[in-house]
Length: 271
Image 1: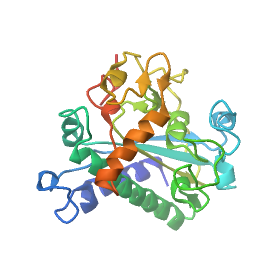
Image 2: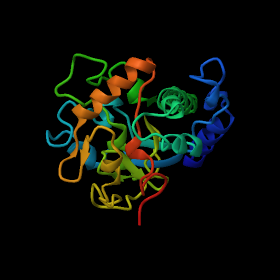
Image 3: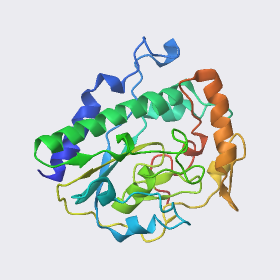
């Protein structure tokens, strides 16, 4: 199985899936009926033995609780990471009122994640059917984060990180808002799978953690609750409290995303 097969499978899945469109039955309002959630995905492939994964166990990065690819899957050879960029409709809608998330963005955050999970399972199924054991860490029963388990070491952490995996595989670098800036920008969602299939790893086109970020401070300016600053980065506590406020009104949906729109890195790497 070649990498292009996985990429084409994902592209077709996103293009053809009815779940990539908001139906009247689930729409928050008539304004979002028929809205497309994601554009075509971009992929990067990393080695399960990449030393950078070991670095994530350091307390200053994630911590010892982070599970290495081979702790998820002993025979792991490849980590496949992908980014699903939000559609222009979702991104543009979230620029209208910078104090509150748009209905489109809320659907992108929640229904978008549901579709992303289905894509992960589709790729896993293809690989297993081809004879390669595969795991989706974010959907595995061993996965935990401080949001869904009491078995956590510190706040705002988990035993697998989509953004860190994407960084290691070569998809992009972090920004001031702690999002990951890819060649298709920062506004979207990440997913990953770990497989026994060997696929040649991509070369990281960067060396520094924040290399794609211009540190312009626009995301800090956009934040409705002042959770981001150039001096201190992102305050996850302040951010989380605001997300809780949105959940009180739109539960089971929640979100914000103001740091991902109307910024130079919204849809590309800033010059």
